Image: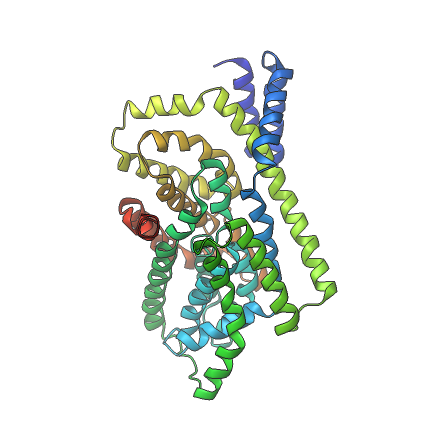
Length: 431
């Protein structure tokens, strides 16, 4: 190991020890490497050229701020409320109905935003308050809100899948399609768990609606429910690209929030745009820093060294997937999800390709793995969000979410070892 590489690795380790923001840590590590490496000016020039020619002109990457904008408009307008009401008429009358509503609402909302954090912070407030009114335990209410929010980036569209596609070159359309069945499986698995707990704890059944009320709610919700239809229909009909579909979804969300639900004005829209710019700036800094970081990893042949070391021991791709899943689940407990996606995923991608693992299948598996990390203590972001919006102590939520994490991990390994679950729809459409 040469001195520049050693300093590069040590600086990156210090990022976690000193709790430095991940983007700054990657930039710091990269700068020290280029300063110490032979011909630093050439290295910096090549990294900058790669950044400008491959990243900043990436049409795929434009979809990220557009989906962020869509999610923020949805949460500002009445769309989240409409989604919640529609889910309530579907499954709210069952025992533990509010728990089921929580899951179904997340599944529907995921078809609009592609963000777990938008789901938990937007729908989460309504879900937790509704469950409180019906005397559900606070810990359970918060835990199921966090666990169901993981569906957001699995069922299309998905912001993490867009970023994964940028690094891997996998088809966004196939990734989105590949997430459909796993997203539904997660919802079913969590609903089975809710049904079991509801019967055990005697949680209440929900209210039934008269036919006239049902028609009224469905009529009012219909414009919001058209969002995923327009988004996904546009992509898979070939009318628009995923990036253009993201722009279309953002425009449509703005129109229905302005003119249909009359829940957003010019002032609120301005605040949404400002929040979107802030979020996009943070994401851009992370992705840009990761690109420089990944460039150094590539020129130092770290993936090749990793593949040579592991392939000498492991010949079976399913064993390799098992090890990768375990490593990433552990990383999810300790490291922020954005760091995992932009640093560790690109390192294992050459290894995955060399083992003959389909990049679309792996993309869906690894995104679910990372989303589980969002609900995993001690650093799961969703846990802090639901704790913050509800005022529930974190330790109570953690106690309740562990069985749900086991359910999610069960689905993770199911889609890992039965690739057809992920690949069935993409292979059927793209024969």
